[in-house]
Length: 143
Image 1 (cartoon, rainbow, N blue to C red):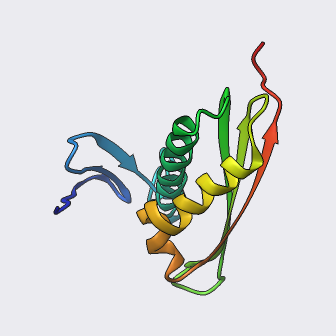
Image 2 (tube, rainbow, N blue to C red; image 1 turned 30 degrees about the vertical axis):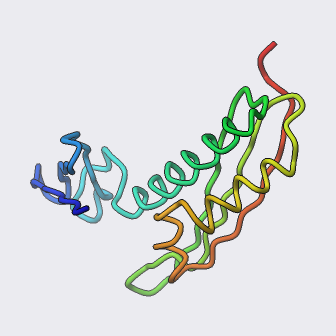
């Protein structure tokens, strides 16, 4: 299956880009780097992709396990080196699962399957970056 991306310059370092789905998104940079700081940077989008990819897996696996999850969040923190190219050196993913009666074994298995088998973005990044993770199970915020 091939993927294609089309990018068009809007102004300076501000671009519009679309892929196979046909949805346009804006990519931008800081004002100091020729952008207008009006949209995520390319490097931020890599982390967005990681969050979305692993979350799709974890939420679906927990749904199949009938986990009583009522809400879900992911927080990602990444470090980058100082010299150029300023690549990520470490990425930490914190999964926060909300629900009463969610089993830690189910959460651990869902995360493991995502990171080791299903999430292609994690596999791509993991080839060059140390990715760690943690999770918390919190009581439901919904009554």
